[in-house]
Amino acid sequence: MTSSPWPDRIEITAVRQFGAGAYDVSGEIIDMTSTGAAGARPLEIGVVDFNGRWLISGVSVTPAPPAGLNLAAELAARLPLSDMTSRDKCAILLAQITDFQSCAAAGFAVTKSDPSQCRTPDGRAFVGEISGD
Image 1 (tube, rainbow, N blue to C red):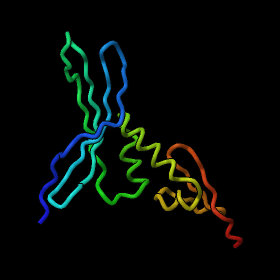
Image 2: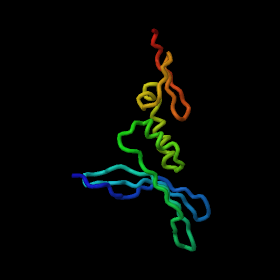
Image 3: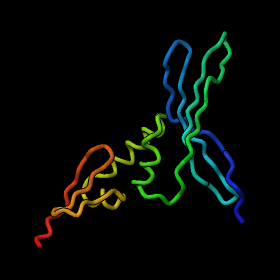
Image 4: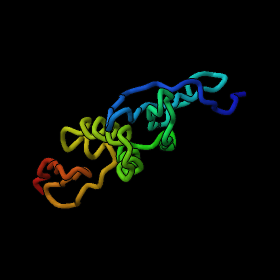
């Protein structure tokens, strides 16, 4: 039997200063179960230096898409989000799409025109082979 997931640790991926003594920290909460890793959830934390004490000014945890989603579904879940971790993940996912085959395999809609076309959410279009029918 596998136990319910619990947060095991936070892995920091980026720290950005946006003012005097104010920072945005991006990372992921790494979840575990009794059988091992259970996924990661994007995290944004705002911290400020207030009279020599570091205070958390805000926290945003983005739910991770359910396991087993295709690339298109994961992008659809992350694109509306504004946190840096989601934007960075979208860029990584979109970079995997380099041609018509990878676009179609990612789950994006393919037109029934001849030649077929597949378009990514970032506006790139890929053209399939002409069927010659």
